[in-house]
Image (cartoon, rainbow, N blue to C red):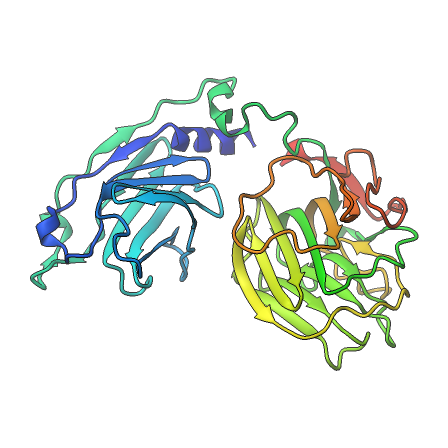
Length: 384
């Protein structure tokens, strides 16, 4: 955790400048990027003619992946764009693209984060207004900025958490299918049914993608007892699922278009807003789907966390940690949002809420606490 915060602190304190080609070298509606600053998950882009074309958007993502995110736009004018990224960048190369789509951007900038040095560099080849190619040799100089090291105490690395008390620093539920973990069962939660408006969410620390990978489940395993599920499959994709009649005949599923990151804490959410299903990863919308129907309300099974409690010998347990499990009877998110940075407080819409800081206590309106078992454990979040 400390090493990650050191990297984040170094990134947060960096102000990085680059002089690109003069605006004459770019097409009329291209943006000119002059400076970039990172502050936690917030990305500040400074330049000229930024997003002056209403059809243009901003795209950001690792150069090691085949896709880019469309960050949430917090504020903009012609000289500055303020964005909320779906994650805090770690060392590596990232693309920043501005244009009608990510495959044909009007402006493309390569960002390099390399502890303890951070560089903004031009792409290898950029198109000019005259149609010529600009090679790296012909690019203007890139300014390299050394970043001050965080002190040993790490105090300056915690700017993101200033003023927050014990930000997610309690305990989490730990699962490992290779060590015989089984799901945690929330006792007396058979009546925790969902209607046509709901949210199922949690914080997760995925160590390995596994088959099943259940986060939250209400599923009897046979007959007409199935209701709803949130999981992360072996492919790393987030999956929201429900069946309106308790069977697998007319069930509905929605999958994220990106993987849930491994080896870091991530907020995931699955919502239904009157048939509009959505999935979120760290506040970014990663899937949407319109359906007709709501989950069955059959009351056969208690809610399970971290796996299923229906099928002996095949528990579909995740490999990792789960914290801040909340089920609500409203769709709490309709678009991109800033991931929560505090423990949730219960409200009249909170059907289930598990902090795991007080064992398996349920602070929601329905169900009792988690039934203790030798097959699961609680660990300190600080261990990650």
